[in-house]
Image (cartoon, rainbow, N blue to C red):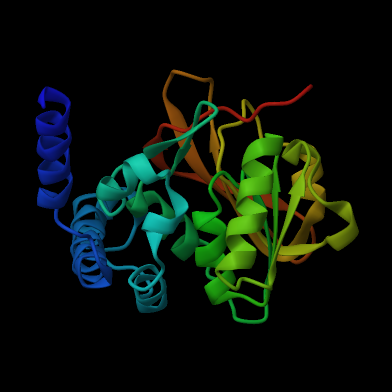
Length: 242
C-alpha cells in the first residue's frame, strides 16, 4: 500500500511538470534575441557597433538551441549564458555566438572553418548563413554526437572532422573565414596560412582561467595580417599536443 502511494505521488509530480512544446521554445528564442540585443548595446563601445546583422538574429531566432544541449539543460537552452555539454566543454553564450558570427561579415557563397565544434550549435548558425562549413572537434564523443545531430537536423552543408583543430583542415583551404570557439595561447600559424587573402578570423586568445581577449584577425589581399582586440571573454582552452 505504501509503495502504491509513493508511485501515485511520483506520477502526480511528473504530470504536474508543464510540457515544453515548440510554442514555449519559440517564445524563449524571442526572449533570447532581445537579451542579445541588450548586450550588444551594453558593449557597443568595445565592439564598435550598436547593432548586429539582422540575418544573424533571424537565424538564431529559428534554430532550436534546445536540440544542442543535454536534456537536463533544455529548460535553460535559451538563457543568455553558456551551458555545460559534458566532457568539460560548454555551448557558448548566445550573445558571443551572435557577435563572433556577425563580426566575420559572411557572404552566402563563403566557405568557413570552425575550430571547436562542441555541440555544433555555432556550426548550425554558420551553416544557415554560408555555403559550406567545415568544423573540427578534438573530443571524439562530442564529434560523433555533433555529426549525428547535424545530420538529423538536416545540415548537409556542415562537415565534422574529429581531429586537433590547431592544424586546421588543409584539404579544404583556403577559407573565407575561420571561427575558433576555444581559447589559444597564441594564434595558430596553420590557421593564418589557411585563411584566404581578404578573409577574417575570430579567435579568443589568452591563458586558461585568466583574462582572454577576442581577437579579429584580418588577412589583407597582399597577405599582410592585422589584428585588433574586440572584447574580454572566457572560453574553454584549445587542447592538443602543441
